Image 1 (spheres, rainbow, N blue to C red):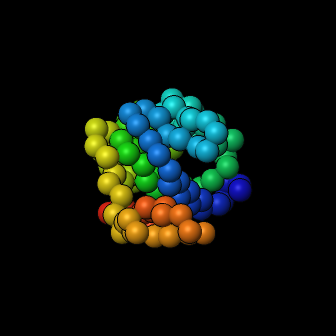
Image 2 (cartoon, helix red, strand yellow; image 1 turned 30 degrees about the vertical axis):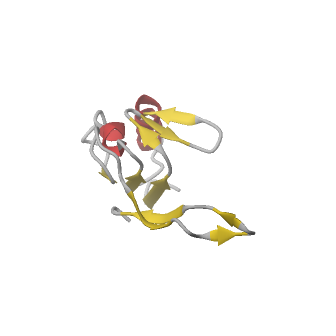
Image 3 (cartoon, rainbow, N blue to C red; image 1 turned 90 degrees about the vertical axis):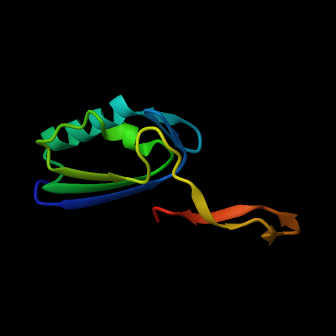
Length: 107
């Protein structure tokens, strides 16, 4: 992306206060905000919209500067779960019950 790009990020995974999860690691709020500040300083976008779906996801943007043209929206505030819904407790895949949830109230 470049200085004239409009960037959309949709992150969906697990989270906690000041932390989001990836399959094999985590990222803290300070790291995420730092990465976004680096992107702004490097002119990697004109405007950026960030959808974050994770428990306590509101905690990830509490220290996001207001002057870097990012609109961030989250599935939960800094102290609450994002609550899975559309759950299928009886789903069976390859003969095993997986008890999956297809989404949440945010999505």
